[in-house]
Image 1 (tube, rainbow, N blue to C red):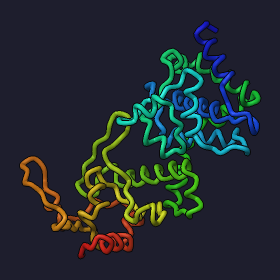
Image 2 (image 1 turned 120 degrees about the horizontal axis):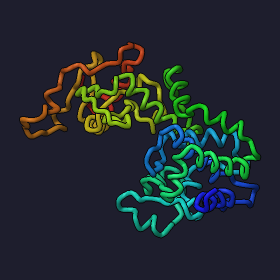
Image 3 (image 1 turned 45 degrees about the vertical axis):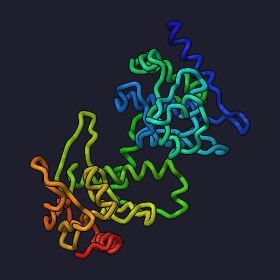
Image 4 (image 1 turned 60 degrees about the vertical axis):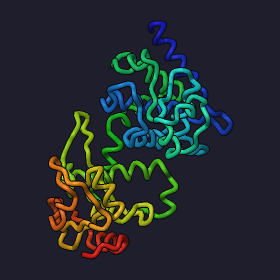
Length: 318
């Protein structure tokens, strides 16, 4: 090994982990997770977001190598890995002083509010993008922290956990959850993201209201998989409780600016919506009475009882 690679190999083998209740493997599992993301080309820049893909990968490895004495909380290593010298956090706007002070942040939701992404030393990122040096550093992690279980790690690396979750959810038509289920922030975050992406795919990545469809080169798009019955209240991730809407119309739908009748026609609440005429874009009121874009399969069309709840909740007459 070169001296630079040896430096990071030593860092990987001497991670500062909690030993009070046996080894807490959060940090080595997070590192295995980002290595997999790089290897699968899910990450191509030195930026690691708390994305559903990363969290699903972390939970996959935790299921095999996690400790019964510790919680599978990705927020812990994502924050505390800063102490090992090669892991750094980029703050969301307005939270720069919070990140700079290294104030302890607890929980996934709180961390996502404060931190935009993590990044590692440029030299380490370069090593992890090259097959040979990535393999060498992976072997250091496996041999030091996972009892030389190379075959098991390779087995886990062979499939994409988030894609598996999304596929299972699609095959079941979605899911509903109990209050107890919602205590696992990481798992619900992953499943909710899988719901949203499945809903978007059912609408061909288009907004059901205005039919807008824009995809980026990294497969991000401008539409959201929106809930009709609010998830926080109903905990309903079945696909017929979903509708694909662009950012603007998702925001407007969630605030009752428009609803949808039993014939899937748009009802704009003209008392709530006041618009200035524009020669460049259609006004929201111009869509009143038009039918929304619907999925190809009737079984995935928005549930009429959910739409009825939405109209009644916002006081919109059909």
